[in-house]
Length: 568
View 1: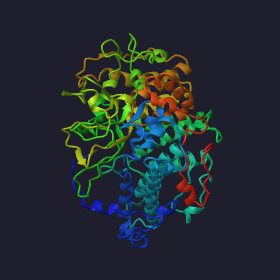
View 2: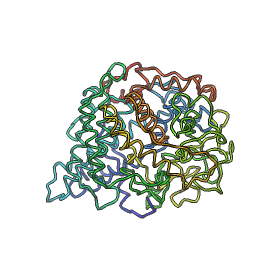
View 3: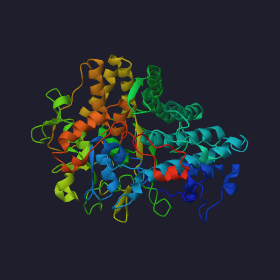
View 4: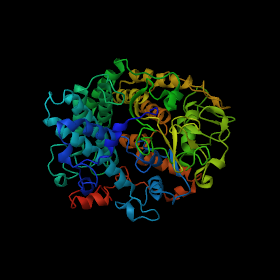
């Protein structure tokens, strides 16, 4: 968001109140107790505190899921100054040694899994604190009570979705649970936990208005879109033993199509004309954004409410500071190459590395990856210089992930020590993503002809997104005349998701949902190790590495009530 002053934001520093482990039950010094604020008069403060948790992420637990969604997917290397620089992210890249107590691993002794778990459950706790008061308030006391309940249940679902896709088995704690320590992470089955998340979103969908008067408040269509996403993930039913996909629920996929249609038919959202507009601050409120986390700087709070999600990822250049993380892989770059008809190369894309002088590519490559000799973010006067932008080019190369980064002269930027933070909102759901959910559901329902125009619309937009590009690249992207068989249609849909949503953080979770993580990543490593030798340590174990281990600190805090995930 643009710079603004919100003095009331100081209340967001309250750490509220109950949660699933000890750290959530310790009353911080110099804050109000629960009994002092859990009154109808203070309910807005509780609601705002829950909203604020959306913006409390950091580069060690970002809402932009580049560490867990891209490093684990073969789309990005960790980057930085070698494996020891935030070693936990190196571990994610090679899948070992992933252990329940990451704080015991030198050199940084940083438990990234526990940090993320804690962040999710603080958000859940804040939503629950507001819900406790709202449930007991009358409409006379809180005229917008039902809407506020819907907003809080959306926020709770947001954090539970994040926890679910990272750990699969987590304790479901709502505002009615008196003692969170008595709730196991296996109290509910996999499908029952999905149902709980969906119930929160169904309630939000039913009570929220289509349009809110205040920017950033959750609305009906955002809840509808998020519910479609939850149902899509839930439809791929997994084995409890090895996480393999054992059934694709056709009834649930029909729900996905219907929910997506509700959003589409509302007319409120559309594909923007130029793909670039999704990644520029001046267009952060464009018609493609369905749900985004609101960011700000110079807002009256000590360090602002800017995004730390990509603070590590800027090139090592005086224009920004540091730190050269999140480096696109050669495999990812090669995936954008196209044939004479402008279609993906599929089986042969990775045989040779992309050559800018001879290879045609989908233009989305140059919106996504900054590379040597090409302008950064459409500025012909600011060209990627090569290895000088990388901290360890010998290990990771010198590509730069560009979508999450802002231009050096953007008014949205602020320096915080050596880091760059940004007031540009963090998009979580955009319309193109929703269209591809619908296309995916249609393909799995064997309604392939209905998916064809959806995929082609997205490819057509890509073909027309060259206006801001100032590169010497050869661009060629075409439409499909047919998606072919169901298996061929799956391949095309999955490829399209990789290109359209490239480096936005969803790739690994797609692979797990489809049940193809092991085969995809093994094939990636077999070739990429010749380009990045550190991948010799790669070892993906099926039935284990699809999810992270339950953090050891949380197992202890539960008095060993929590069960560890398989094979950890």
